[in-house]
Length: 417
Image: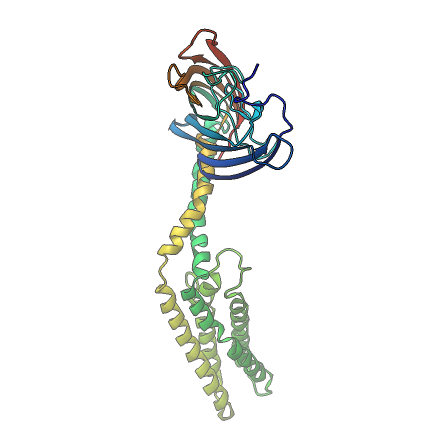
């Protein structure tokens, strides 16, 4: 017969379960933590008869002493408390063993609500004052494995050919990414706004050039010079529209460089337009063309001054913060390349050491079980991101009537990156 103080074998249990959980992943390391609270009633009505609290924490990581031979460490810490305000159903007490008991069965976020001691069969680890479960527990479970034999997912010969090119591409991508951060900053926007202020004057310049070209006394040399200026004006207009735009293809700063700096022997569209206007002015020799000469000379000087000012302001922009952000943006892609080329295996075999420690309470004042341990070997068979674990955990402090140990079978899925 079960003592009344231990719990109820049959009870219309009603309960409310709440939990919080969080996880964090940083490259090869994954950390998670959970807290669960169960408020329950073992009698009819809404009275609170018991409260159960569960805490889970886990960490999984690996190190790489040798390429494709990772040293993996997985650790889990679990604890729980059961507070009684009345009768507690037997099933709500804590029982340990090698089979997990989810806090909320079927839920996507898994919280284990019992002590895991893989050297004991399911629910065979119970408090020593009676085989009726405990009201508190903690357990620590650690697996350490090393891949002694492995076949890389990407063959070494192929990786040696591909990896340098991919790393070069990542380094090359750093510049445009840093430029995109600079383009979003206030200093560059000030440069872009200064250049964009010429949009209205460029519209007026186009009208004046077209009017000069249509005059009956315009010579062929003058008409050709105007055509050159109009062509550069088209380029200026197209780049002014792209300043500050999110649709720039390639480098976010390319409109600035195209307008001001150019590339190689090309000056940039603004200085080029200023030179074209000077050529047009040289062709305006008639007395009636003085007004056009003065106007075009003024615009050319304005474009030269604006271009020089923009260049000075741009060179004063500090790239340090933008380059650091670009480096951080590329850290994960670089990590993926490294994992694929240096770590991920098509299949592998890893000898594993299992270590468990668990304590189930309350412990009697005399002759209590204390903390129990389980230690044993296992083999981990890895297939890309799926691990099959086969092993045996020995009951270190075997006592009369207890098992010598228990087989360990497991299937886990890894986060490759």
